[in-house]
Amino acid sequence: MVAQEASNTNTYFNLTARQELRLECSNGRPVSIRLEEGIAEVFGTELNRGRAVSVTGQKVAVFTWVGCRVSVQGEPTVMYVADETPMASYLNVHQTLDQRREEAKRAGPGSAGSNGPVVVVVGPTDSGKSTLCRLLGNWAVRSGWQPTFVDLDVGQGTITVPGCLSAVPLEQPVDIEEGFIADLPLVFFFGHSSPGDNPALFKSLADKLAALLQRRAAAADPRVAASGLIINTFGWVDGLGYELQKHIIQAFQCDVVLVVEQDRLYATLQQDLKVTCPRTNILKLAKSGGAVKREGDERRGAREQRIREYFYGTARTPLQPATQTIRATDLAVYRIGTGPRAPSTTLPVGSASLADPLRLQNLPPSLEQLQCLLAVSHAATPDQILNANVAGFVLVKDVDTARGTLTITAPAPGPLPGRYLIMGSVRSSME
Ligand SMILES: Nc1ncnc2c1ncn2[C@@H]1O[C@H](COP(=O)(O)OP(=O)(O)OP(=O)(O)O)[C@@H](O)[C@H]1O
Image 1 (cartoon, protein in one colour):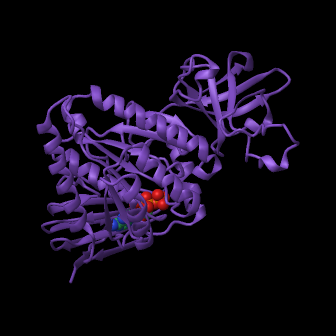
Image 2 (image 1 turned 120 degrees about the vertical axis):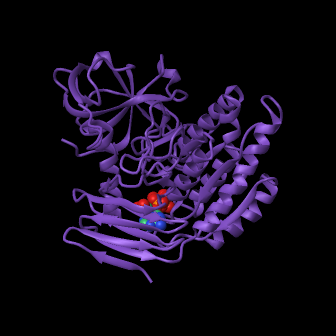
Image 3 (image 1 turned 90 degrees about the vertical axis):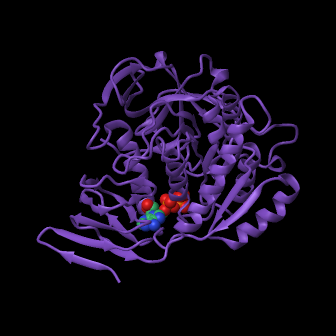
């Protein structure tokens, strides 16, 4: 039973231990949540008693281990209390990971075993993978660790814009209103919202990010190294998607694979990893009933929202984007790969396919670039583009092919941090 009362503007809920209040809040209609009594958390981030948090365009759950009283102001599209959640099994996983972190810390810097657990979360679309990563990350931070969160879900982009493979050390619990606050994330630009758009490039970037993080772990503060990695993946788990998931597990040398929801994926991974990664532990976890399916429109809307936030910030932390017109000769826009590779059997004898997925193509200014998101590479020369991470992003607002200029919007005024820009297929209709 849930005690629920309503006053003029607020609805109050008295939650008993291990219940959660689920809310779906649409964009532009903020809902205010306030913890009145007891202890509660939103995906692992503790709510402060008496301080309201404002949620918009998100689906969230207020969970309590011990019982609490919460008030809600505003009009969520859906709001209900659930008795059954998989939180106890998720917490068990966290406790096991914590033991592994303690062992890594005890092993001491430089010794074998000084790196903490590398955990990857896999499962179908909308099974709650990002949410589980967020929970595990937040609980780890609250236990005094500093795990690195790695986001390989190019379709959504939790750390930065969609189309990226990125990593960031978690130094504080994820902000309920603002999401991940990533000051200096490590970002490689893939450029597309599905890994299937260029699987060879996806693999190559995953290898680079994995190698870089492994090198960093070797030089890191022992506590950071012992904290390990938490890796979020995309929800494509069949055919080529499955092959890419296995590639991720091998590239990052994952020692724990958490499979959410799908028995079939769990069984197939168990069989396949027995040979290639015999020391990897594979665990199956239930999906939360709160993890809801998002249709294509909603996903596109969420991508657009991420891009808008990159340039404009959030209501609490607004940014002042700046638009400038630059001569195309001062920049060089590159595309990686040139569309699907033609099967060699369809090519004239003796010729090679020009559609190499890792081929760099320098693009002159063209209307095709309008509203495209371009990544500013850290590369110093074009041949470094494939190996370099990126400094940030700009959006192309206008192209004057006659004058040879590009008008771009950047999140801050001033010169760009590099002259090599990478174009993919991620666009935004942002004004
Ligand atoms: N317990 C919960 N209560 C309410 N909403 C939830 C809960 N768990 C997850 N959600 C919401 O369900 C949606 C899907 O969850 P999530 O993004 O974690 O899934 P995913 O598997 O990572 O999705 P994707 O396939 O895009 O990678 C999100 O909007 C998330 O906020």
